[in-house]
Length: 442
Image (cartoon, rainbow, N blue to C red; front, side, top):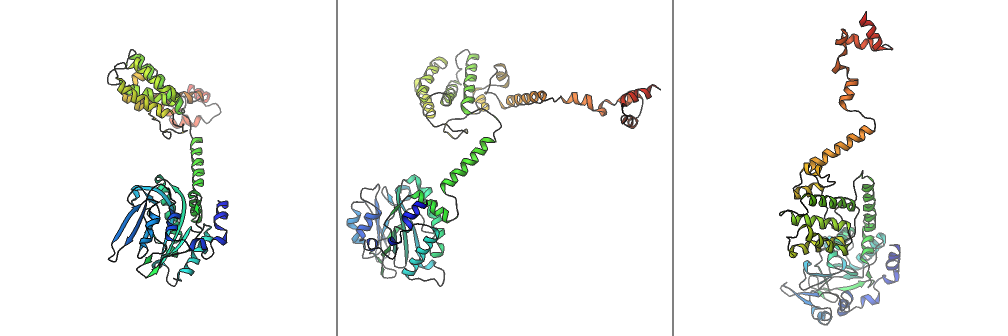
């Protein structure tokens, strides 16, 4: 992060006033800067007519620079991002930058409203927040537009881009950032075009002309806002995951558990005479393939499924067997995760499998199934294991304990012919039973 900031932020000669490379950019050069020829996607050029009507045309990166000068006599705009066809978020081709639309009407009362001192305040704020200078800082006639070009991102990165864009706007609300200008389909004014609201021409004031790495830039934005970076979030998640794993009290790893399920499926097949009954064939073979996706190499899964289908479910047509084998092969090739349900494989509980195969508690006990059993059978086995554990630790049954310790239930004072209070009073002696016996004999 520090290397990034030193490289793009601390070289003051690149950002003081308007470097000639930035301020002298023509509109076609500006288009080529933000949308290099050959980039993925198309550009939208937009203009407004005298009646306020909006006209948008989609162009390639090759043709847009040629036509852009035709838009400079009035309000001319260009899309910051590129699209597959019309300028809509659902047609995004590439995310190309982050931006701020600084509106003069949103400045606090009494603030300097001239472009140059306003731009200087933006620059000082960026330095204080340790953020890089914009690739382009544009005077739009009635406001400023700050654009940070980034290495293009695919449409799938839109949530990450949107999050960084939202935080960037919040950081500059006091300098006029318009909170409504945050969506990926926004357009920006073209330098050299006329702002018909005020009669002034939009022009570039300064800029680094650089493209920034999005991950580094977004981390700098989150740090400036006092929020955790992506790396910090990953570390936090890893620590939480580690704590959860260390807090586990037992249980088998997924591969071990499904190896046991595989043994249970074979026991069930044996109990059914080697052939799976109709009504359970697809389910049984799917479960068998699921076990292989946890326990076997991906290259072996399809052959094992087809071999088992010929033995256990010979009535299933190949058109039903092949999708099961294909699914299991695909799942077996996925990376293994330490916690169930996070690696893309199916993770069925023993109770779910028992329900789908019609396995009752009596069947699970009779076949000595390890994993496939209804919930009541699992609870019975768990209670039995707990009882054995307590017994091994020296615990006795409740009946045994009561027979030995509960005088209230036995009431020995009745047999001795004395009252309850007399019995317990005599128990306080050194040898209470001898004392009681001797006194009862007198």
